[in-house]
Structure formats: structure tokens, C-alpha cells
Length: 561
Image 1 (spheres, rainbow, N blue to C red):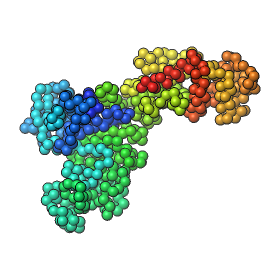
Image 2: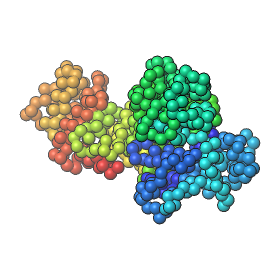
Image 3: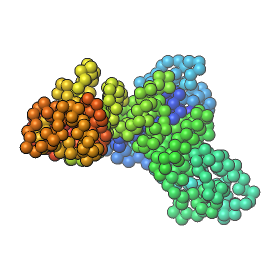
Image 4: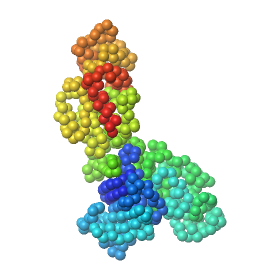
């Protein structure tokens, strides 16, 4: 079974959200900055497909605590169990494609039909589940919803490791009714007795799933044993690794066991949702978990929907498995990066190269490392709070790539700007096009690179300080040679009694960017940041200069985010 689409109204931080997923999506990862309502989407799916009323609805579950308007969650699902698509059940509600306003297309050969389940919660806090199509609706009870088999992992829950009501372990183990009939005293004698076979059959499958996810049992002996919890209801059965209860293991191991239990529960190819999948996991275990979940879902026709804030997770995923989530004023949008049938090489490369940018709210595409360093200096100097505003700078490594990246991030819903040189006229058309698309471009006077503009605008003393910075990083000989290649004596440039002319300033800037040969002075992120810190320290002394107006405008753009 797979989720084909979701529509959410008036639920927690979402006033309105609608998204459609590709039928082939076995693994879907929702990414975006914090508070973008990613977890709310997962909770909505979990609630709509829940086999019971195990969750409690409260006033704060309504958008802005306004319970005068009902919560409505609609989830379209494909690949349904045969029991649900008979005429006596919901066969008359089948449709070819999910349509939240009522799809009427007939079911086509070769395509899995879907039904749409609608959960409504009014101010009485009593949830109502229905299957609907057009203007017709039919209630779907807990028994039928249990056939959907959705499992959810939110945070570090120990419920999967004990025999609690509605727990993953209870759903996983065979012959639940027969085991439940055994008294506590009998359960304590269950190990080594004939009755343990009822449990062991299921645990063998669980051990296989654990190995796929990279979990090596210390004792190589997974068992279910009686363990009395005075504070817990239900049969006191717990999952053990040798003599150690699994709930006492580390957070990462518990997360993987939780996922394996979820995988075991979804044996009919159902839906598993996992919030913040990276929690408690080292990078290698996270990668192993993602691969295991993908393999399981693809082989059994199920689906795994996850959220993450981890760049490691993003680099492990294919571009068509990733969807960006953005939220503004209660409206949540979900935009897929690509599809299986229409891949995107640029998306693929940038997900690997600058994964952190896809977890931000806003992106500054920097032409090169010098510009990236200056952007970092804006935060270090207190001019702009990139971290607070959710802004990520990206190194485009020069050339036309920065325009491609700018358009990509903008099309994926990220607030985007470009910070670049103005020394190449061939890019004038590209800059104009970006601005027409609503992407702000921060650049310099015509014909000016970053180095040329800065050395043109800053006071003489700062010019000499920047030359000294280059000398400290490289050596005086290298700096001297680069200045002389551009027609300026090192001694004249550093003479405190010599006032630099505009032409001499241009020559220093040309030397810094390696015009005439040699190596550039500041083409490293750390050096760009040091350059930026020096310039920002005197910015107020050069009001109205292009350096001052550009950097001030860029800082404002960050703060407005």
C-alpha cells in the first residue's frame, strides 16, 4: 500500500496543505527548515490511517487553537488489501487518480486504484473516519483501518519493545490472542517451554530485519520474556537481547529496533512513517537504515515516509525521493525535487554537494569562495544573523553554474538570492533574467570583481591592511610579484606616506584576483571571511560606496527572511 496524496485542513500548524505523491514512490523524504510542518504532515497521515483512537485530540491540535472549524485530513491510498476493495466494502469508492475535489475517472488496466480516507474532528473532539468519492461517503471502522497496517515512529518510543496496548511488538508477534490468554505467572515460565514457539517464529523474522539495518545483537539471542512493569498496562512481555531488555539499549539501537519492528508489522506492504529518522544514529547506521527501509518497501510494495534534518540522510537519497516542505501563514507546500520518469542531474549533484542548503529557509548563491567567506563574515561581525534567519550560503564555484543553482533553489520554494562579481559582461542577460523571476542579485559596479570593488572603495589604511593579510597568509615575495606584474611597486603600495591613486587601487585589486598571472589572494572561504571582517569593520566610514550599499542590502535581505 502507498499514499498517493494528502490534503490537510486546520490541523496544528497547517491551515491548508495539499500534495500528490508519485505512484512509484516507495521512499519519500520530507525536508525543510525547522517548523515547516513536516512532522505535522506525518502525524496527519498517521491519524487518518490509524487502526484505533489511540491518539488523544486536544484543543491545541486545531490550527491556532480555533476549534470552531473542524480538522479535516484526507489521505488517498493505493495498493489496498483485497478485503477493502470488494463491492460490499469500498469497491464503489475506487478511483483511478486521487482527486481531493472528487475524482471521477474510471480505473484503468494496469494502474492501481485508490480510495480516499477522510478523518474529521469537530469541536466535540470525537474523530470520524469515512471513505468518500464525489458527494458520497461511507464510514470505515477500526477493523477495516487495521488492514491498512500503518506504523509510525515518533521520537524514542519504548512501546515497540514491550507488550503494550497497540504496540508494534504486540502487532508483530504471532497468535496474539493465544499469548494474551496466558497469565503473568505462566509468562514468566515461558522461556524454554513449548509455548515460546508462538513468539520465536516472529522473532526470527525480526532478527533478519535487524541485520538488514545493521544491528548486531550483542548476545545474538533475541527473545521475548516476561517483565513486570508496575506502571504499564497489559501483558508484561518485553523484548530482550540476551539478558538485557532492549528498552535499556542506546538511543540508536532502540531507533533501529523500532524501525525493524515497524518493518515487521508492515508485512502486507503497508505504510511506515518515521519522524526525524537520524535521531540517535551515527552516519553509517543512518545510511544502513535508509537502504534497508528502501529495500523492504520496494520488495513488498509498501512505502516509507520520513522527515530529516540530516545532510547525511539527504546525500544518501535519490533526487526523486526528496520533497521540500515550506510553510507560510498557515499554508504548507510540498514540492518534489524530481520524479522517477523525469530525473534532474543538477538536483542530484546539488543534493550531494550542498545538502545543508536544502534544509534552510533561504539560500544565498555565492559566485565563489571569496563571496561565501564575506557572507559568513556578515554573521560573525553581527551585521546579519544567518543561523537565526535560516539562511544558508552556497558556493557555486563560479561561471554559469550559479544561475542554474539560483533557479533550482527558487523553483523548489526556497527564498533565493545571488551574490556575484560584475567583471564579465556575458552574464548581464542572466542577471536580468534572474531579477525578472524574483531572484535578487547583489553585485558590483560594471566591470568590477569583488576584489576590485573593495580595493576601490576602502580607505588607504585598509588597503595596506589587506595587503598585509595576504602577506601573512602567503609570503611577501608572492604578493610583491603579483603587484609588480600589475605595474605597482610593493613599497609604494605599503608606504604609509603615499596616497594611493584610483589607478593604483585598481592595480592592487587586479593583483589580488591574480590578473596577469600568479595566484589569487583571497580565493578561500577562510580568507574571504577575514577579508570580509576587515571591510565590515570600516563599512560605516565609506557611506554611499558600492561596497557599503551592496553589503548593507545583502544584510537586510538576510534579516528580512
